[in-house]
Every structure is written in structure tokens, then in C-alpha cells.
Amino acid sequence: MQAFDTARLILVFVFMVIVLAKLIAKLFFKGNAMTTKFIARTAIFAAFSIILYTIPFLKFSLPIFPGFLEIHLDEIPAFMAGFAYGPLSGFLVILVKTIVKLPITGTAGVGELADFIYSTLFVLPAAFIYKKKRTLKGALIGLGVATVVQIIGASFITTFVMLDAYSYLYHLPKAAILGMCQKINPAVKDLTWPFLLMVALPFNALKDAMVVVVTALLYKRLRLLFKKIDAQKN
Image (cartoon, rainbow, N blue to C red; front, side):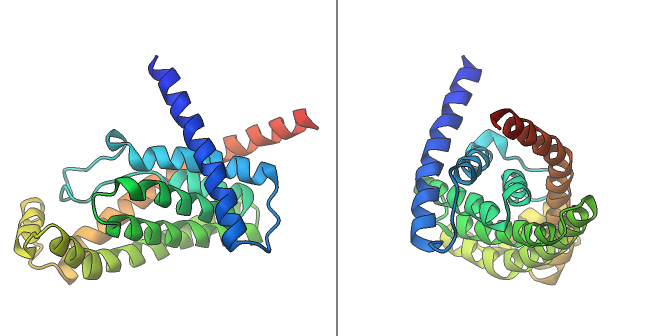
């Protein structure tokens, strides 16, 4: 029964994503001819990304970081879409999963905007590099560059923008946030550079490493699967 419910949820999300993807393509990407296969497969990746992004038990914290820093792996489907069908496909996955999450946001959209920026910084550089050099070396270079860009960008945004935003939204004194960090690592003396270097950077590095490893393991197999499906249709 649980497997049936999961499959039904995926189908619902795929349908929603196809509708959204067509609408977004019509409004913002008029010059790009999108085939039915492109939209349908982008929708499948987006549906899995939405599930990983919105279902609470698929997110988790680690005891070595403050509890407000959660790991979620919704960027993996976006990476695979970007590698399989190009940067636009990866971007649509990120955009659609963000739009779907907005009605149930608990952060007035601020957290979703931050996640959208973080995911864009992560997925698009890799997808653009792989589009230019579609080899294993190109994929590894793309993932490496994207990881560096995302770690630096996300760490700075989290430290110098998001902490202030969350403090304001939740009426949470920054001293309380600092206290959460110091319970894990007493060496974090304030929420500027010490937080960035000892909390934000290690957290993003670990999360990105998890995403990159899983993406690398899954993508080759998924690519072979799609080739078999296309060969059978032809």
C-alpha cells in the first residue's frame, strides 16, 4: 500500500510539473523549442526533486551541526536533468520544485528563495560545463567547479544574509542562534567569519559531497536506461 501511495504521489507531481513546465516555457523561454520528451522527462526529475524537497522525513540534521541546518538531497534530480538534457532542464527542475514548495512555506518564502539560489549556483555551472564537454572528465570538472562555487556562495549568503533574515522572521535573537552553534562547537565566537569558516563552510562541503557522490553513482545508470528506452521506441 505504501509503495502504491508513493507511486501515485509521483504521478501527481509529474502531472503538476508538466503543466508548470509548459507554462514556464511558454512565458519565459519562447525561443526554445521544447519537445514532449524534454518536458516529460524534465517533469519526472522535477517530481522526484519535489518529493525530496517537501517531505519532512527526507530531510535530516547531523549532530555535528546546529539543528537549523538541514540536509536535503533534492539537487540530485536537478543535476541528472541538467546532465541528460542541458542546463535549461536542470534550471526548470529547480524552479518548479521551488514554486511547488511556496504554498506550504514556513519561512514566508525566504528559505525557498535561498534554496533556489543555492541550487542554481550548484547545478547550472556543472550542467554548462558538461554541455561543452560531454565526457567523464567534463562531468567531473563540472561537478568540481560547481561544488566550489556553491560552497563559497551558499556559505556567504547563509552567514551574511540568511541568519539576519531568520532572526527577524522568527523573532529569534542572534545570541540564541550563536548559543546553538556553541553547543556544537564552542570555538564559534560570533556569527560572522567564525560561523562561516567553522559552521557554514563545513556544512555545505559535506552536503555537496553527498550530492556529488550520489549523482555520479546514479547518472551513468540512468543514462543507459534512457538509451535503452529510446532504442526500444525506435
